Image (cartoon, rainbow, N blue to C red; front, side):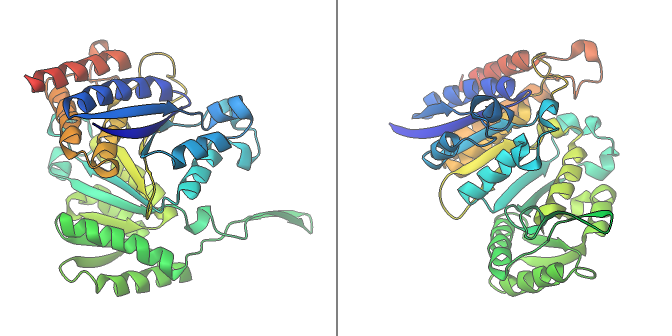
Length: 362
């Protein structure tokens, strides 16, 4: 029997709750499809700070590097907000991405018919939306140097540097173009080339790499227009390729097309080594420990892990089908329910998903 090592990073806030649901479901589909999963839970973010004083303990990074895939729930808590930037929980996530060499972030946004009424946009605008944001993850303004804060002549100046090397752009462009070739064959590269030198290099390199993918249609769009077009006509997009900062913003905007950020998974991939799979949402400290979290994005992230990280596509199909069946039957967590009195808690939604898996087996 094939066995895979999975590093689980429950993290902070609602993270442990949604991790417990995903782990149960993964154990069921693994047994059904004839492979085994060996889980190793490690601290990160605020949990890492509590355990070791570091947002990414060295032991956590070592465990991740030695695994076949990494499944992360969420990080962050208000009690750490007063710490220096490099000691906050979020710094642990940036360090993990860098330590694993995860340069490509894939965030799919697909409208689930049962949830079309949950979106704030009209059904005729979002019906049929199926896009993927491909975001460069370990370059750009979040990692560029120099950065910092200085005092001069009685004033304080803070600065960050948005920078990309040509090869960094080339490799993320290839990811987006290759993905589009497997989908509907369209890439829209988003930049700010009319203002930024770094974006002009971005556009030049994307054009150059496009020559390797003659069957993919390439277009370009300025980021401000892209933000507008995502709410005006999101169905025009297939694969959106963009930089770290722009992708961070646009992917969250795209997430809300579905009505809840609690429904969306993501994958972060490198050239080799384990991928990192995580929900798009945050740690939701306001509802942590109250059994009110929506575990769906974590479950769908686990499905992405099965498909992209472990190449167990049939098992991934089972998880995704369970989500679809439960939603089609009307089950909703609080973030999706029109009537709060009918909302399911995190554990109850997990039970519904387990029942849907069992029903599919028969």
